[in-house]
Length: 291
Image (cartoon, rainbow, N blue to C red):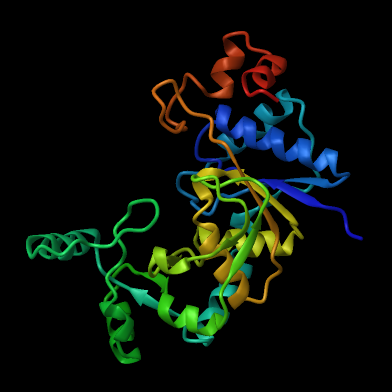
């Protein structure tokens, strides 16, 4: 039998905070408790916001917490060719299309809909779904738009993708969703509409790179925050379309700020660096997180 494989996958676009510490420590604890492996991955596809200094800060924070991980660390920015291959597979199946609408154009369509008394659908995070009109552009029309230099994103044609999947999708949940959902969870990717799969200058997105990475690294147990519970529906769909293995999922509690909101990397008071400078110890962090 293969060993269980867990991973902590932060983005080096800010300093780690208490919420990241909880996820990292929980992954390491569950890996140790199952005689499994613990991996660290840098999700740095945003090459503008992610910097070597912030990446080094993550290493420093995790080592201060007493964590160790397998080397080498996978850095997404070094694997764009693998994501491009996955994108090509989806394109060859006719499941993606280039989307050219600007934010202003999208907002205009949404406002027009609201003015007519028709609510605009939103995804589980509350973001308005992308309009579907460009699904039917001809290849010639797509090429003409691209030739003008217009920015665009590759979006998944959700209707075609669900048809290609062909079967209802589920995932196995050992944690819990926002409403306490656990056990066998029915995936509902349609709620996300035509999600972004890649961009003009970056051949991937979070959704695509995360499923490719987890498969290539042999990750068997995905332990992450409950804010990503519903996104698992999209990930299960992509795993099905790309013939990738299905891991086990465990979505954990979020560590909230005193005002009840989700912690942000922009907040300095809960950054591990700041807490360390205030005299906190790794044991203090574990006690605060009830670990």
